[in-house]
Amino acid sequence: MTSDRPSERPRAPRSHRFVSGLLRLTSLRLRLVAVFAAVALTAAVSVSGIAYWLNRDAVLTRAQNNALNDFRDSLQRNAAALPPAPTCQALADAAHRTGGPNTYQVVLLATGPDGTPCAEPSDQGVFTMADVPATLQKAVNTVHTNDHVYHLHWERISLQGHPYLVAGARINGDGPTGYMLKSLDAERKDLNSLAWSLGIATLLALIGAALLAQAAGSAVLRPVRRLGEAAQRLGEGHLDTRLKVSGTDELAEMSRTFNNAAEALETRVEELSAREAASRRFVADMSHELRTPLTAITAVTDVLEDEADALDPLIAPAVRLVVSETRRLNELVETLMEVTRFDAGTAKLRVDEVDVADMLIACMDARAWLDSVELDAPRGVLATLDPRRLDVIMANLIGNALKHGGAPVRVGLRTEGDGDDGEIVIEVTDHGPGIPEDVLPHVFDRFYKADASRARSEGSGLGLSIALENAHIHGGGITAANGPHGGAVFTLRLPRRPRTTEDGQ
Image (cartoon, rainbow, N blue to C red):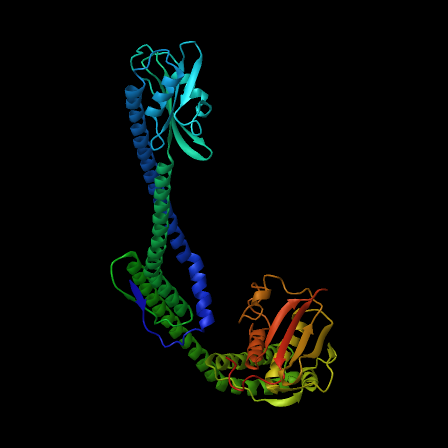
């Protein structure tokens, strides 16, 4: 048996507990109850059926044997002395002595002295020859070699919905023929009572099996449920979750396996977290360490750039290349430092209420894009944003469209919703070849480039990732898709007022 450590988590709402309990009931617990019930029902019905048929056979056989033996003895006492051709009156007297209202009814058949057939019942209103099956009459009239022995033949029949035993025999071979009708109503009542008793016993066995299944299900499913809850907590990041283990059964072994796996996972995650933290520190430290020499190099390259026109024509291209690469390195260092701030959770918003259209125009004007981009942005759309971060977002989105898309590039601005709960929506659309379907899920991944063979390009592979992080810190997001007529469409959604002014995690 197993149980997990007590946790400090608040209990789930009652409705959630009811739904989860119902789901558990309709799954393994219900199947367990159904299996127990099916087995118990099959066993109970089988045992009850066998017991019923054995008792039925015993009751009917006993009643039948008693009636046949009594009928044989009564025929011997009351009809054996009749002559081969008795009178009808003698035959009637013998019939009344042989049968009775409290035992069974009889009919005696014989041929009178004048050759006239005579059939005399013990009770004309209860039993006549019309009630005797033809098959029984044929069996009784069959001649046997040992005529001195009574050959009793019998059948069980139903008359007017009541069960009866019918028997017949020839007396002394060539004497009169006698038939008997014995009611089996008492035996049927006994068997019906037995059937009801067995049915009630079957029902009680079924109820007992259901209760037993419920108890067994609780005993079995409780540790399984706790294991599931522990696995859920583990998936939520509580890597210290463990199960208490007791016993040596399969459930205990499964709990030990879970604990071993959780311990290994916790150790592995700690190792990976340590490596990730070390990598972040390395990138941050490297970026900071690079800034000082880069500042000096940038100052030198600025001087060289100013003097490039006066330099030897063979040296000037090399100087311009150094200037360009130094600027790229400077931008990469600044980008890496921004990434480390996001990873460390120290990035913050410095918001101000701005006209979004003015911000878009200022972003494109600073980069000389006004002639290359079609802008559809109505003035007067105010939002509380971090102007610097919005500039970074739009610079990356528009620059990406100009670099990898096709002209014309269009930037559209619209609003959705009303008031402070509304959003601003900015779409950057190009008319290039679009984004391959296998690339779409990765366009915002860090250092991802659609063409892996181009290991070195003008971009660092961090621009769209930085844009997405800046959107997240505002409480918004960016999506990428292909337009219906070709080209890529990047959609930026930002709340008109940020949900937080701290880091965007």
